Image (cartoon, rainbow, N blue to C red):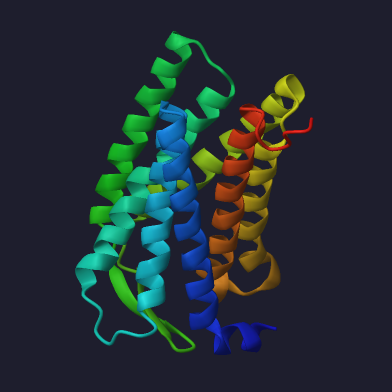
Length: 227
């Protein structure tokens, strides 16, 4: 299976990229209909992840891809991913004081994500026919720690808040999205395919974004009109 994925990696990357772009489109449409900060955050996260996916995918067809785009990829990932926290807060229907605290933590994480992204050593990494710039061994330890905090500090709250939303409001999609994101992120290490971790995690991102969309449709009573 590993060899099959590697030999078709560019095709898979483009499928994932187009899927995420489609989700950006649907979130943009949702924002036109429901102008609220939760949808804004969902759209921003989708844009950041989609930019990430397209930059990686383009590495399979463009020789000497400008490094500035890889740097922007890290910057967008570091600053957009923390917006998962306000999504959790809004889904829990936290009151004003609670959301103020969530936004303070989010802004702090966004600043840390920006600082971390500017100190990552980028090295050329080749998997099959795809060439991308990835985190190198020269990246400071503190930057690696912040990167882990951004990852687990958003997935775990999403799972926990999703479980509460499921129990309290009978909508399971936030929890499902968090679990799927966690599972796909863990598949690389669990199966010994660390070289494919970046790709496997992208499937988790698509699932998470799709669950956000289904959550919105359920929240506003549009998913099953007959129910």
